[in-house]
Amino acid sequence: MNAVLQVALDLLNKDRAIRIAKESTKGGADWIEAGTPLIKSEGMDIVRELKHIFPDKTLVADMKTMDTGALETEMAAKAGADIICILAASDDSTITDALKSARIYGAKIMVDLIGVSNKLQRAKQLEKLGVDYLCIHVGIDEQMMGKNPMDILSKLADNVNIPIAVAGGLNSETAG
Image (tube, rainbow, N blue to C red; front, side, top):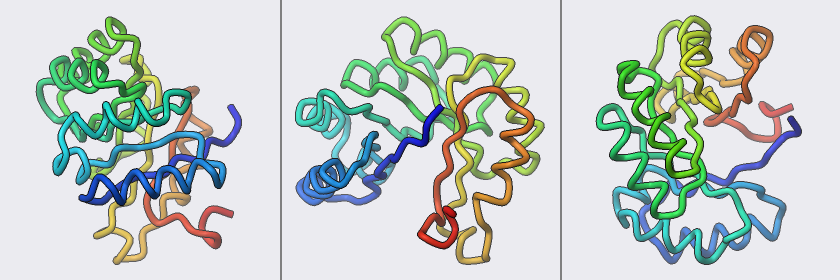
């Protein structure tokens, strides 16, 4: 799979998010992510609006789901999300239910490994469950302690056969 550039709209204001999305897609962004803060601030309406404005772009809804996997996946998919993000720390039943719902509504599931201590072990389990994408995510708090998402990427890439997203702490020096 070729590299895909995803812009994460991790802010609170709808108008600013849309402006950044427009600028990012002009600059080459392939995927648009309605980040968790934006979804919490604007609800599913922002997912609908982004899909309306960018119908040909892959739209990611970073729901950070830990429970009610089927319900939250259905909600995001019906609003226009192509990919719904849930947390790897969720119970397997939550992930399995999210996958079933995604298949019904034509969406895909990305599972975020943020907060998981043994990322390789969990990634292998998630692959067996049938998730579509994994996400190595170093949160802002972890970045402040010097953690880098690229440190785990090669280990996972050598051990799983599904696409891996990398998020958090990326810049011109760390993305190489």
